[in-house]
Image (cartoon, rainbow, N blue to C red; front, side, top):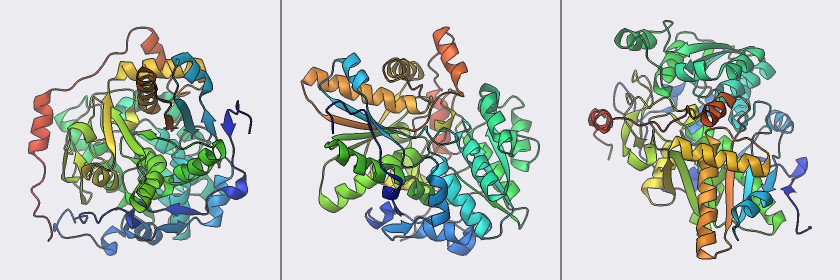
Length: 456
């Protein structure tokens, strides 16, 4: 190919036919525990929430799990997604590093989330489910499940974190365009929501609260299941199509990444780009660096504890061993709403605990500065969540410049920021500020972690 190639496109017939399951190569993880009994969860315990095929994927240790043809048919609308060489950004930074980004904003909803939403909607439809409930932070998952639900004729009810509901009206409108119902969380519709509002009528909400509301509504009707957009094993599994495509495209480019970067809130898009490389590191002894980047205002991997915790505020979900800030930790209302989650994917957490991946946190303003630098060079406006990966990629490129090293940097640009322009308006107007929390509040939250006797 030309030395000036900018984008690397795989033909549709080279789209992966299977998802990659990191559980086949990662050392065994601590079992998930039932919130009432404290005993390891079995498949039957998850049946009120998920269809059988999703449960089987959640507990599978098979290295490859076939992508159903109806799911691949829908994927073809935007997959394989392009890989770009960021040549103009390299020039703007004056770095010898070669920067690549996998762009997931080409999906109908504008992010990586449909990779799992379409799969989950398919399995629920096959199981005879009529209705799905879910939560959403910034709205990318909500939009994606709404899109997937419309394809399979499923009713979709979404509890959107209130601060994002107020900040991002157009994402809410997109969910409604796809036919979903969107409710600001905490709401008066559930016991969990009412309990929060009784204590704090002005609560801005959190993903932990929204999850409680969605789970509570799901278990009330037999025709309803719950769908989660991050954190769980099966969600990380579905996202690995990103990294598998990227590997093939990097081969087309004749390059191999020294570092692979993704932003991290619950862990799905980081897992998507990084897990195929992590699996190769574990199987073949390669040394690709894997860097998860999170907000300093919600620093799960960098300041949390690796411990058993609930996935939601009301303690309705099973207990998972993960990096956590505590289920009742209330992060500040930063614009990267998709990263405002107290816990991290157990699989990503296990990798971090074993030293297999790195983690870094950034403040809001430095991420928006990086996003603007990227947009002015590459033309794509990143979502606030993705701006964390952009910041890290730029910093790695500047390190290479200082050290005179021509390393290869690959990051996942997990979504565009077209529905987040108010955040950019606030940034340019000097209204955006770095958000902090009281250290005492984090300490109190961590002190309230459940006391668990780990199974032998």
